[in-house]
Image 1 (tube, rainbow, N blue to C red):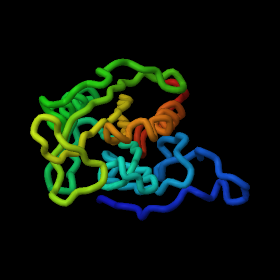
Image 2: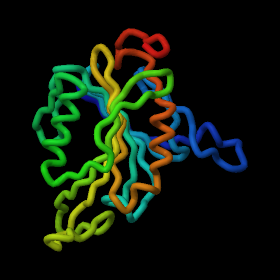
Image 3: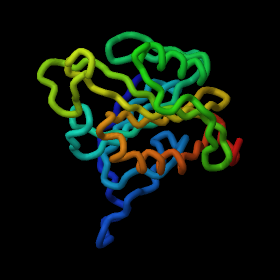
Image 4: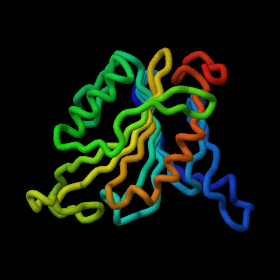
Length: 216
């Protein structure tokens, strides 16, 4: 069964403060991970059983982002279990590396440029993960205004996506931490994404998975 939770504002931790902090500690609704996220950003969670859980952190309006909406996200995918997308199609990944391959080929395609190629990183607690940043244009609907630019070759209006990924493989599945920015907006919230990544701690092997020991 799929369930979407209404957005709320991460403000409670600083109601009594004279000035708000930059970040607050957030624990997922399934208590399978925690990290630091930007204070005051809205949160929306979408889940489909125990095999898919997506949490999006949504910032305030910014004209440099597509549709004016900066965001960060954490997603969980169980291995080899299909997840139905909003358009009715299915996605399925046999491994974290399979997710990376499919994403680069199907989402971004041959026109993509690797700002940072896929490489190994070590997260807090010593966990190994994969990191990459990809730059690729995407067509936009007519009348789109925010976060768009002109393609240098064709002059067409596009969303020049600069998206950062960190992919963390566990036993039952994998987490994907994402910063879906544009080229013009990327630097604005890069530090916030880095804070999320650097503090990301899986607490169990995915939703309803076994609790994890530190670094395991």
